[in-house]
Image (cartoon, rainbow over all chains, first blue to last red; front, side):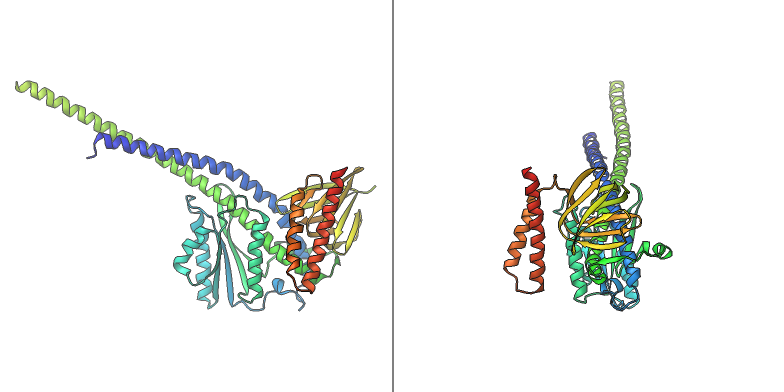
Length: 293
Length: 136
């Protein structure tokens, strides 16, 4: 049995752990607020971009002149999964659930006889995916050095993806990230970005589409907008991911703090019981010693 | 004077949203003014100065690329960077000019070079405008 001193040390250690998890929870909460407002601030841009592009796209859809980024390459043999995860752990199932979704997708595609390539954004996703899909990972980047995610970071990833697309390295690109719903709910989401699907397109199709004047020509505008749209979607995914990360970390740390409290309570109880048992034992020894005399 | 709704949106924030009288937009094919009832138009932007006229006041914004959409609902400008000319950090523009100048030096004559030079000119124009307002 552990001595009383050992038990005291253990209780002190658990208390120290609890303090750390408590502090991490508070830090995550304050960062979450910032990340959440950043994600919300990015929504109008992404939504309007989607609406405008959907409008223009429905005008050119079906024609052969539609750029490849919009219409696809016409085949769907090679799929690229752009998997965005966090840079750090200690955030519950956040990274794992994104990776699980990516893995399910990849396995399903492979089962269909398609070729899968993976582009990892974020260190944790790479570490986890490496175990199963070492060969499929064609590219990876991490945002470790980035403190505040800016549009330029997303643009860099977007440019790389387009470069790969133009080299004919893949046909369909799907973005896998975690959508921020609330502090306790983050939904791993897969969104196809090449060729893009428009949420607004179906609703816009019902309304009469305004006949726009284009300046310069339609294809030139599309040529500029499509890569931009890609970066915007990636940017949005990164921001949503960031908010989700802090949300997940906050609830994970909240759990950890509560568990530590529970452990401290149990350890203190055992400690006190042991202490009392020892006092009783010593008393018995003294009394029986006195009686023997 | 009739007003219309105008949104100026940057990737990270909504910079301006409200009723305005007129907006001058720097399009790639030249500046154009938008008044209420403008025909539906989609235009790309060049780096330049966007001027908002609202309630007798004039606000100048620096936009670095993006596009504008005029529809019945109003005007929407999605810009890569959109800041008030007065708050704009000149170092961003001068830095961009320097990198562009450096990249042009190593370029072969051709389409890409022409485009880069055009871009450089746009940035220089913005820079001139910024120094101009700073001296007032």
